[in-house]
Image 1 (cartoon, rainbow, N blue to C red):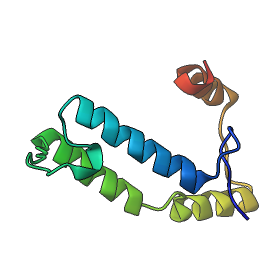
Image 2: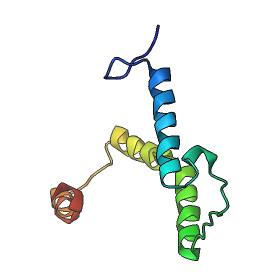
Image 3: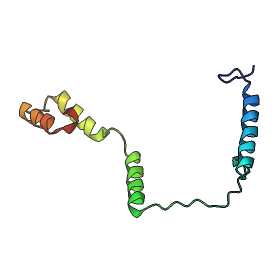
Image 4: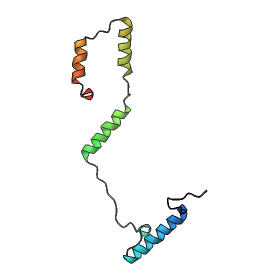
Length: 102
């Protein structure tokens, strides 16, 4: 099965044609085609101290569990025993302080 582009031209033929056109254009401008690039320049990347610190913090955060099972188990035990109590006022205050609900 041949994969064809929108023009109905087989993909391998279209690629060959594009490469040939690229060479003709490069020749007209007296520049080497892209695939013949010599790669004389070198790339360089500098990472700031702040970026390194952020990466370290992000790595540490990824290692933490998503759920604090010790706290969940403690609350489950309190609920089961009937000793877990929280006032409606505290709940309302937390809802109003939470920016994600606004």
